[in-house]
Length: 210
Image 1 (cartoon, rainbow, N blue to C red):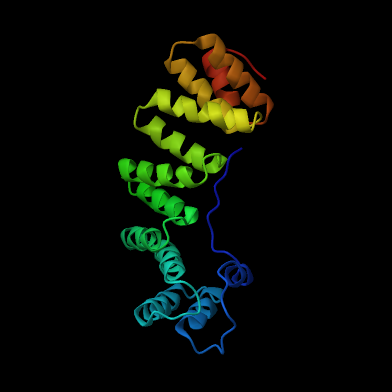
Image 2: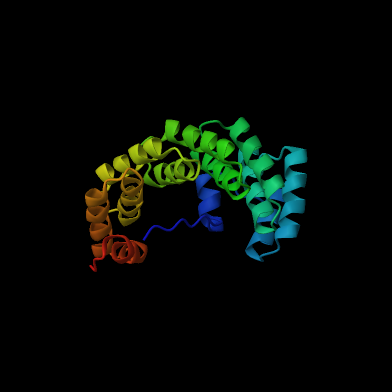
């Protein structure tokens, strides 16, 4: 079953991945990390904003915007989150995670064309990333672009032949294409891989059980 878990990185990983230097604990960035560790997201927002204003060098400006975007998500301010993620993209256009996060928030806001643009940008950087392909395919399906979504699901299945979510999703497109035999075959395959939604559709649409 496909799941997408987008959460804060452990602090040690953040420090390693961003190439940050060890600080005395007096910088706003260090204070923000401490606040995050304490689940004090409002405090983290305050310190991240100060770090951005001061253009602190503990980490990149792009990452400060990215991290502040995560804090805005945590506090439910999606409009502010998407602005920060967009600024992170502007600061570092090659950061695939920033493109993906921007797309995810646009998706949550129901701004599907903007979400699609962000996923397209992420896939230009990493064209065979399965999670990015599935995100884009879901948007294409939601906006009635079945043929394009079908192509993405096909690519996922080529890259990962037992991806039950992609197989189940392709089945539903086959159903809309009036190709019942292929639809049922895909549902049966996805159900055999443990996809419970496919198992329900297999019974209701094909009269079969796995």
